Length: 337
Ligand SMILES: C[S@@+](CC[C@H](N)C(=O)[O-])C[C@H]1O[C@@H](n2cnc3c(N)ncnc32)[C@H](O)[C@@H]1O
Image 1 (tube, rainbow, N blue to C red):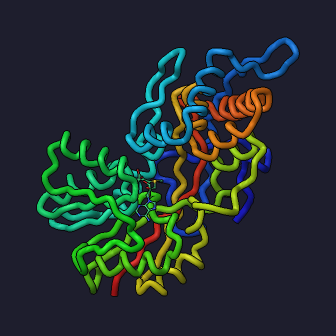
Image 2: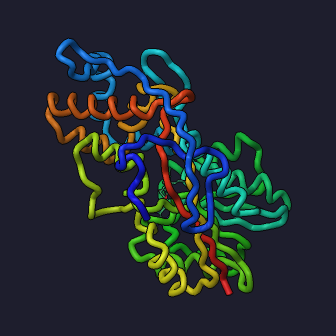
Image 3: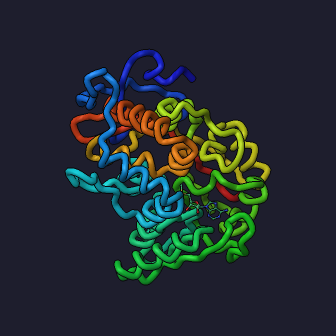
């Protein structure tokens, strides 16, 4: 596992659409980055416009909850000046979603369980395909489940349901589902073996399958590294960890201990989208809980500087079609024997 190429002095983006390979096969990406001018004052320092600062200030003072709501609901974050178009969780992960959809291979009559479903994009997707089957989305967030129900109802999907529950301990119907899937919703379990054992019981025996997408290590995820560097923070050792299932050897052990067999990993290299332009990407990046909490801890001068560094970093990632970062994920597949 080499260092991210950014650290080797090369700016690059993974070629979208198809750069997902079996574990450890590498492919050279195409570099089509177009740099944008950053705004600097006469001394050469990065200029944070007052209007933008006050918006960010207001948003960060509004706290994590309001930003989390935007993310959960998949609503857009818009550029306050130019209104260039939406950034949303769906947009950020659009390319990942396509890879996961193909890996799941949902059949028309299958019953699907989506763990940590958020606003239910992947659950609805499964339900559309499983026309004679069903899809159940589960999430601990009340607001996410409310939103998921609204969206499914608006679409008129009759074979989808959502439950607000902790997947670690929830009493799922036993041996009911053909497929358990998750898009970045299984990394936060306090006791992963117990959680996956519980989830596994919901799968039908002799072939029920698990197909989940999880992040590879933070060092391999340019978006996380770049934001930490810009904010001059380090990856948190404590608390919920989005990278907790990054290591194939330990994930394999967890799933085996939880009763799964045939554990396999596919390397997914798709870029994540942060916004149509730097302003939209800045607003999106400031929506991360870790970013907004870091900014809240700083005094006004330090926060202005931090936002300036974020902006500069995002400008370096601006390409013809918006702000993108490299990312690396695993699709983990396993079966219930
Ligand atoms: C990164 S989000 C992904 C949401 C969704 N899968 C998507 O891709 O849009 C992670 C989700 O997992 C949910 N989650 C975390 N721990 C959970 C648990 N123990 N049981 C159920 N959901 C959980 C969170 O509430 C959150 O909605």
